[in-house]
Structures are given as C-alpha cells and as structure tokens.
Length: 293
Image 1 (cartoon, helix red, strand yellow):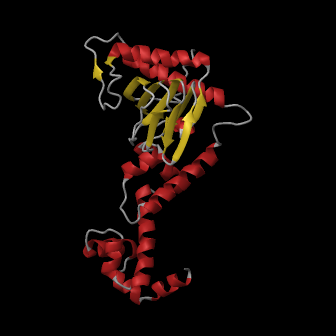
Image 2 (cartoon, one colour):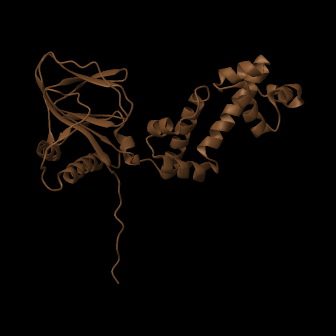
Image 3 (cartoon, one colour):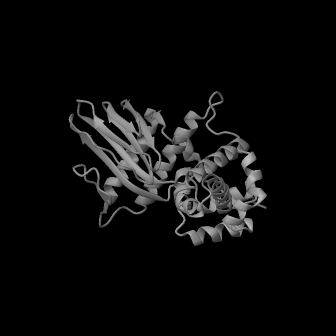
C-alpha cells in the first residue's frame, strides 16, 4: 500500500500586492508609508538609505530588508543613482516572524529567483518604473499561462531558501514550541492591555501579532481555556474596578474606559460581577480589592 505524504506549508503567500524595479536618481527620496502587508526591498546596485520606524541605516548592494505589516518605512538614494527591486505581499505564515525587521545578504544563487519574479511580473503586469507608488498594478491582456502562480512559487522559494541559509545549529531561527507559545501569549497580553481604553479590535490584534483570526482563536483557547474576548473583558473589568475605587464615580469610569454610555457600562459590570458599580463601591469587596494595590 502506498503512503501519501501531506505536504507542509512553511510559507504560503496568498496575494501579491506590488512588484517594482526602480532606477533611482541620486536625489531620490520618499517620505514613507505604512501598510498592512509585508514588503521586501532589495538593493540591486549601489547603496540605498532605509528608514524602518525610528531606525535609519544603509542597505548595501546585494542586501534585502523586510518590512513587517504596519511598520512605517521609507527609502532614499545616497547621492548616487541606484537600482532597487521591491515586492510586497500578504503572508500570515508563522515562519515570517523571522523576517521581521530583518536585513539579509542574498547569495548569488538566490538572485536568480529574484530575477525570475521580475521576469514573470513583466510578462503579467504593466510595470511602471515612473510611478513607484501605485496601489494597483494593471494586468496585461494575455499573460503567460500560470504566471501568477510562478511569481508566488519563486517568492516562496526565495524566502524558504533564506530561512535555510540562516537556520544553522549555532543560531537557530525557530524557538521551541513551548517558548514560541509563551512569546505569543505575552504579545497578545500586551496588545490586550493597550486596548483597554480604546476598545477591542480582533483585526488589529491579528495584524500586530501576524496570525489569522482562526489560528488565534484556536491557539488562545488551547493555551488558556478562554477566548481572547473573554480575557479582554476580564482585563477591562479589573481596570474598571480600579478606576471606581480611585474616582468613586460611575460616569467618570465609564467615560474613561470608552463605553458609549453609563448604562452600557453598568450592564457590562453587572454581567461579570453580579453587582452594579454603586453596589460594588458600597461593599467590602471594593475595600478588600484596594488592599492588593
């Protein structure tokens, strides 16, 4: 009986956003942008200046930098004409965490993969070097059969080969499963804490963590026995109690936490404690809670 192996998917790229090959003049500068997908910038000739959030550095010829989703970034020529290849894409694969703010030197054998991506892109889209910041590439009328799939495969192959090159025994890329889980839980907790006063956004949380909604739900439920929403409500309730003890005022607490109305805050508080905010303040629970602060 033949055994069928299920193929693993270390990196999956479901969508390409833009592909550019730019010939920058020596005075080129771009004020920067922020978007919800990955971007790889490769210096094909000469050095280019890179900004990633508050970091400024020089990308050497033959190097590539990866900008993670929602990271502010920009580039500029350094008083010399320079050629640069840029590809941006969606990817929620966990292995992409390695590329966050990463600068890598692309070996000669991997440059053929970049060239293959550019070759297929030129046959598939009307690339506009004169308009480097377009948000939609125009597809050509009759692209070669399977060109979009080949772009995806070449890019996935490039990223996997970079991972292989960097993954050695001295400096392993991937942490253990338990350590990875703990790191993710810490990140989730950090972002939930940051949302207490602004309100919960599952989309924002997933984008910042770099994980899909389904994966986040399954992972968090498995690790904690709760949903992310339940944990957020718990954190918000704890903060509500603290503010009530501090201010002694229901309306101020509701406004501070961003509730749409005092009535909605009262409903929320009673749902999770069985008490109204005023009843909580009058009881010994509030006094007991204050001892732990």
